[in-house]
Length: 249
Length: 309
Image (cartoon, rainbow over all chains, first blue to last red; front, side):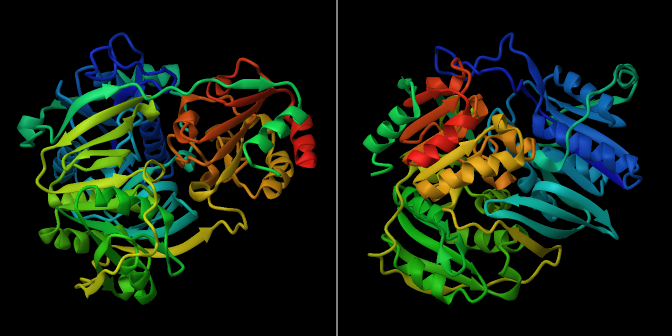
């Protein structure tokens, strides 16, 4: 079975985003960029499935600027076999990303597509579900455990009240949650090896996908700031404050 | 504008998050509801009474028992033929279903809105709440998920909506429910708790996390939350997680203990009315958002606090 994993280049997890003065967005100039953390989990899961012999090939796909090649090289260093960059400098919304991935899926015919549940930049949490809908495939979102057997996949899902398990017929879409696995660090030899793995470049045009935005961003502002309050010196004082807040009588 | 609100329910009751979605939908226009499941008569009845509810569409069938997105999305998409906006709470259920509906309608969803500016314009947090974007949708139909903490809950009574049965469709047979492992707890659920005590990695172990926090939570009648670091370290289950990738909460009082205050955690709790922080590092970022802070060793402070309350 072939696996497709989708990866996005985003602002690094540890960088505090700064809103641009003109309100047009978040300043990404000279900011460290990395693979979306949930997508790292997706690449790790795909790699493990290949190591277990469940999958035969792992193909990583990214949609973004030329620099997203770096993100794909990271995926290749972690264990993906080859990569596809659908190159565009435009910002691509989840619906268009899902359409592009559906086209790639039609060409590659994977048994499963694994994506992060959300990207930490736009926090949309949509792409996997949309992709599943477009393909008419089942979806296992917010996965904490993935087990493939007999033409189907069991997915344990993180839900509000605890966990639930669903069984999906393959082919299926899975989106990753935090506890699914702990992604490996790519070793130096694997980083070197990744440089010679195949990376194909495509365009949304060539795939016949219209990526025109449906949501116009009118402005981006900083949220209202909370003011720091007071520090107390003892538990007794803290109890006093809690009483004043009406927590205890 | 006619809206269709996904009525999330559990154990025969409409969930709180649905009520916030109804409030958001009412800002757009006429509110209709969609109830799906098995034996949903009582839920449909309860939904008709929600303040402002004009009509409740009910789809009842065995294959709808477990809220599988594959089975529900086509029903919602069909109903959107005569509704203008599909509105779902931004819960794990809503987030699972709504984008599937959006793709079936060829609509770009507006996720996790925190305000309605006009029929097409909304605000939503991005970058873990470090920025707020105002976005305008050019799609003819809207698909929206609603952040529960940002809208008042609609009253559970005062409405007098009608009920209309709708075609439940057939089971596409591509997915099935296997089991649920719900965490049994006497404590209030995080997203509706008035008080939350939340622990971080400083607790050092699962045993100490529960031994120290549970008695404090019991004394306060509080829900128990955790930082991602504590969940990652295995001190608490994932459904305790508060933050960008976990639950978004806004209780009256949020007590953060041994939590440094990473931006991803602040994203999930900074709209709390009052924040209390206990941390041994006086420079921890959590103190920059806390109304009341106490610097010190949580292993001493928490038992003393529990005793003195």
